[in-house]
Length: 394
Image: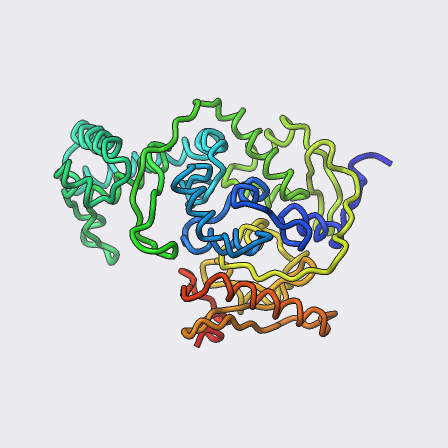
């Protein structure tokens, strides 16, 4: 039988997910670094997602807040920066060069060109002026260590310059140079998100100079990123890979060939695994439950999700932009949602009860208690609200 004929069914895909994504009890991690390394990237658009995703996978979730803060802001073992699809993620620091070269460079060029075009249209200063402001801002940031946009504007007042975007259009707005420029510098890999201004759930943050990293050739970086992701999430289809990376399909195919990825048969067609990963994977010894946050990298990891999420559940669990809300998992599939009420209680509801008995409900209840225990007095509201989460949170 040829390698291309190796069939990987739903049960085995769920078994891989249980161990490689640190979800089954015996596979849980000892640190946030282990979690991020296993998953490659944690969604960072909503700051709370990072902590909730880590806490769901730690053997001792009581350490979640302190240890994740240490990894992000003290040891800098993890970095919050722009990555695939122009989205903010948290990556292991050793991946910053790979992410920057594989996905950031092309997006960065478009972002800077768009900013200069919008400024020119509005009659704002030119590229030479913007370069001066940029260099002054980066110098001030390096001197301060970490700073908010407002603090940087104290050192470089030209950051407060404003210009009108889309004048005369229904979406006309007044943009500040600091907001747009810092976003561009983030995509270019020059600055990263620093400590939040408030608690770990705060969406207001400081900026910091990005960790130094080597400049890699884009093709080399794409191979490194795809190999890392397929190791964590394979098998995956071309559609999954194109969606997750944000690359063109030609880049996906070229990189699959470059890393020697092996084709396998999935229920939805051809998928790929890294070379050496064709062997069968056994499921965990014990059944498992998990409560994962909105935008969790497991729930958002693939474009084709039928093997772990029934299509009829999607309207209740996703917002209109395709962002997943908090989900309840049982043995590798999504079966419901959870939320936190104003009094701090973590509540949940099952939407798919097929094969879900008392043992499952007891395990889910234990996970809810586990989550509520380490959250303590903190109240978490997802940045992207979904129908069932809003209903449960009342």
